[in-house]
Image (tube, rainbow, N blue to C red; front, side, top):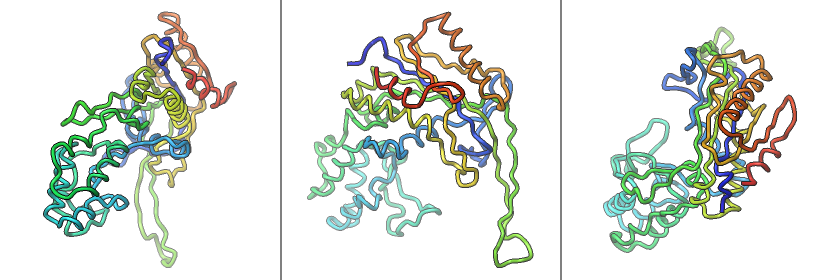
Length: 355
């Protein structure tokens, strides 16, 4: 089991982004927040977690993740609705689909979407859920098996057997899930992720652009505007290793998951406007900590904004606040990776993997 002296693993990172817009608001502008009385750039935790769980790093390491979707029965590879329709007819296919989806969430009518072509005969049918549901891979396999074996309307016993009450997928174990209809199938998140916040004050800058038509020699084919910021971000992640072990029930898997998470946190960023700005951002400083004391976010270091042109001063400021907390409370074990000093990412991975 987990060493109770190392229940919490905390990651504090500083990451420099060039002019970019990796996480946009409803107007297409970079997300912001007011901190210490000044406007800061912000990257939401939802955006960060999405980038991490779908990264090639997790895939290459063979870490299984679930699928978060409203449209499980429309997935072309699974072909669940098509299989039901072929075997039982259109009316029964919709009825059976509603019954199966109803185990997880309230079914809803499929509406046409401009960006995706949908077969006309599917529109208006209750074959999606109102909200995305995070299905475990086992639940998807159970749904698939039920669809292939159905001879008539699914029974209550068959429907009840679909839920995976102890999902072993890494993303579910780390980031949790909530199924309002079935709280017994909820998973408490073992990883908490703060919104990344810039250490420097920002002003959103406009980028006016034109698109050239190669066959039109007398002007542009299109004009537009997009916004960007540049910043150094402080990012904080807290892992409850006790809860992670309870969710996974496998120490080796938990170690692999922790190391994969630490690696993705360091090198994977949201990809919004990536082709326009190439903001391939990696952490230039990582402080990893582990211990049993209550965790603490170190954003106090940047309550007063500072210049993004001084990354080494940002490191010193973060370490200074960390030392003050450690003096007032207790000092956890720690390991650093400092681009301007010593330490490597592998040092951090080895440190978090030994819990």
